[in-house]
Amino acid sequence: MAMKTFAAIDVGSFDLEMGIYEISTKFGIREIDHLRHTLVLGKETYNDGRLSYALVEEMCGVLKKFTEVMKSYRVDDYRACAASALREAKNSQIVLDQISVRTGLNVKTLSNSELRFLSYKAVASRNTEFQKTVQTGTAIMDVGFGSSQISLFDKDTLVSTQNLKLGVLRISE
Image 1 (spheres, rainbow, N blue to C red):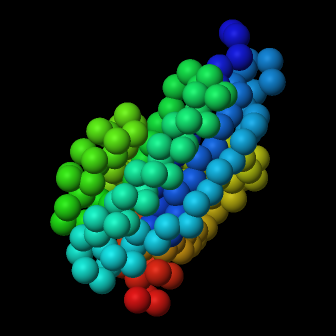
Image 2: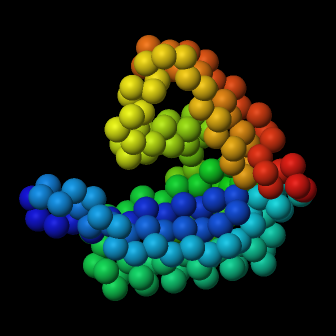
């Protein structure tokens, strides 16, 4: 397998992030660049229920720069995901359309379940002890900007999970 270049974009409640990775059979996955721009989308969503024109303008500008960086690395593929701040905004579909038109990016909003699943998968892939840890009664607490979630594992199985809209940003607002 030849070397592939992949970009992962996170449209979060507190910031926009992009990691660029080289992927090959021989060397595995290697991060080659990481960009981050603080943009507190959650503040408007959690307070007003929608994202303002000014915030969408700034977000599209940052995402456009991300696409330019992707081109400079000759990225083969990408995935762009958004979580609660964009998912819960009353004008989320308009915002997603604006992102697509202005940047060419297709951003997918993730449900809470999808987001947590990907988080656990990421932890498990980077931590060889994860499988051993969840064999016995284990609680994992994920404190995010929009919500917090506690998940209980036993014998390598997710037994129960509970999400509370009590994230760091939501509480501070």
